[in-house]
Length: 215
Ligand SMILES: C[S@@+](CC[C@H](N)C(=O)[O-])C[C@H]1O[C@@H](n2cnc3c(N)ncnc32)[C@H](O)[C@@H]1O
Image (cartoon, rainbow, N blue to C red; front, side):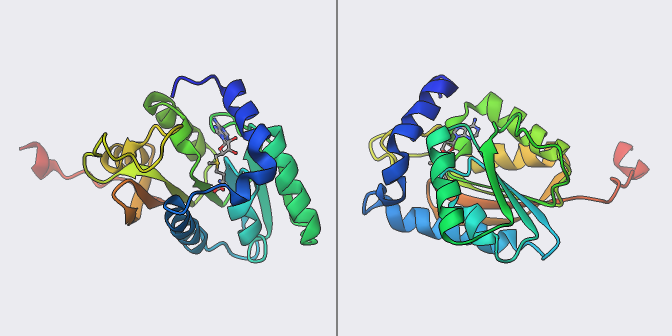
């Protein structure tokens, strides 16, 4: 995606107050199914800190607040952050905080147990997706749940699911990056040919060296 980050943030700030109602009838069930899977797979414990990257109006972070110890939502759009804060206040949630943060620099240096992200990573070009996933791994979460546009096959350019703003990666590319940075991909959920959820867990085991393999 070549759109400068500031322009993207402005775009989301302009639509923030109607974002929750914006999805078209074809997209809505897919978006909902993806969000539900991300929420279920995140499955935080009562002492866990959850970081929701590209949180938008807080859909995932707010849904996880009842189970998690603390939820941190980060986004580049002030308007979306404002909506998320307002929803948290309406719901009386005190264990959530929303603020500015970018995938590759989330502006958060506390402990993180679970990172989630729903329909946001696709805004980054592929090279930046790798940098974003490296930054997530550096935070040291035990689990990362990624729901997003991702291609399970070769997408038909005549039939894009999303009309604009989507720079989806292939599932294979995302799994490779997650593996490269030390996660084990434990679940791959296909929501649609062009949408999925990946669950990546920290691999604590050292790779076992097998001398037979060198012979
Ligand atoms: C389609 S919305 C999804 C919001 C929310 N996760 C949801 O499921 O409803 C994408 C969000 O990603 C944010 N975003 C885009 N690029 C980002 C980046 N590089 N770092 C952090 N957030 C970003 C946008 O501002 C927007 O709020």
